[in-house]
Image (cartoon, rainbow, N blue to C red):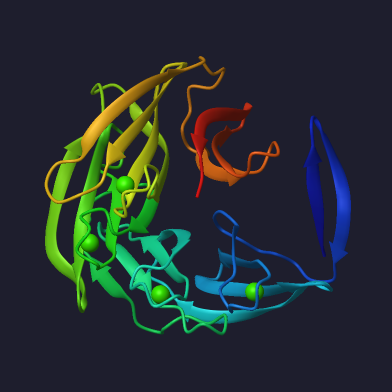
Length: 262
Ligand SMILES: [Ca+2]
Ligand SMILES: [Ca+2]
Ligand SMILES: [Ca+2]
Ligand SMILES: [Ca+2]
């Protein structure tokens, strides 16, 4: 039995009691993996396989089990790596490298992953076409200890092309606490948004996508109370009538970034 609660300011409100257990060994991810317009829940089960619960008007359905993943894998993160319109599951393997399980568009994932040479990373891991060649790329904070280096591994027609490029987003002591990819400036090429955390000081980094180096722009954010980046996330939110915007959410709360989402 699992309780679903909704955050309302400082309080948690019970929304539903589910008649099954959600036995996750990592983060719970929401995304429409079966393409019916409702968000579904995807996570890594303690027994080592991906599990999907379809969402809908009735709430969450019983889970369906997907493939077993490599032992000790971190994740999942969801994104459309091969750009076929279906969400794929991305995991970081303990031995270094990312594994992408292609989504079948019905809530399931391919049994065998594609391996991307992203090296050691504890995340975050995202996908988008940041070099603008039409193929999906994979992006992650480089190194297990965190840090301000973003590694971009380029994709081609058949998945990973084999080459990666490192981009230094800020000072060495900073760590990437949130990462998102979207065409922020509307020029048709996907860009990178990242929040760098150093102690309690935080900075927003905008990297304009395109062939070659990312063109970087920095903006200071109000100091946070938390020095940890482990559960920081960049997300879309609709907080006013002007439409969706990007926010940074960590265990301290929500920070508006002043960037509209498309
Ligand atoms: Ca769905
Ligand atoms: Ca896909
Ligand atoms: Ca690309
Ligand atoms: Ca752009």
